[in-house]
Structure formats: structure tokens, C-alpha cells
Amino acid sequence: QVRLVESGGGSVQPGGSLSLSCATSGVLFLDYDVGWYRQSPGKSRELVAYLSSSGHSTYADSVKGRFTISRDDAQYSVHLQMGSLRPEDTGTYYCNVRRPKYSQDYYGQGTQVTVSS
Image (cartoon, rainbow, N blue to C red; front, side, top):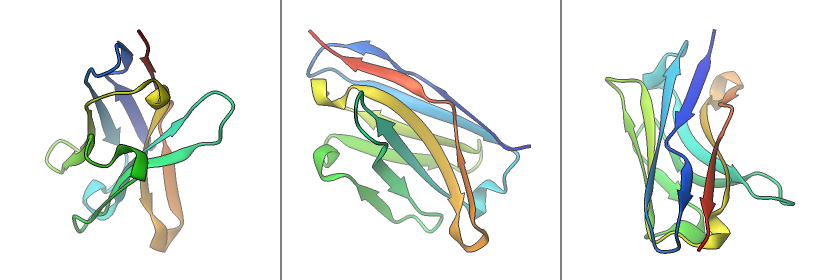
């Protein structure tokens, strides 16, 4: 059974930092691409950051230079370091692992991030 559990969300003031983590189980982690998505109120879910199994990273333009995605293949975990946070970064952040070749795509339950003064 595939399980993704996010942690690390919370409330922070603009300009602050947060670090999100995602513990995974039930997947052959080394074979999967990993990513973080977010959904803000009234908006559809959007890609924040993506890291392939080969190490290639992609970021949404809005977070480039402020967020960093990483993976720990020994711990089967995914991380998102977020800095210089803005109110528009507010939303529910979802961990994602996928293996497109096999049409496998899994999300966690999400963790809330609120950026407000």
C-alpha cells in the first residue's frame, strides 16, 4: 500500500521560511520522480517543484530562487525548503511521487502553509 505523509506546514510571516517533508512507503522510491504541488483557495492545483529520479529539477517561475526540492533516497523521503515566503505562497502543499512509464501517480493528504502578517 502506497503511503505519503507530509509534515512541516504551519503559519509564518512574510519573508519567513518553512521546511516541508514527505515520508513515503510502499513504492520503489529510487525509481520514482518526486514533486510538490500546492492548491490555493479558489485555484486549481499547481506544480511547485519537481525532481526526477535522475536528479533533474524543475520549479514554478514564482518560486525559483526561493524554494529548493530535495530527496533522500536512503530515507525514502522528499523535502521542500521554502524561503522568502510571500502571502501568495499560502495553500495546501501536496507531496507527489510518480512513475510515468507505468502510469503510477500518488499524492499525500497535504499540509497547510499560511503566510500572513
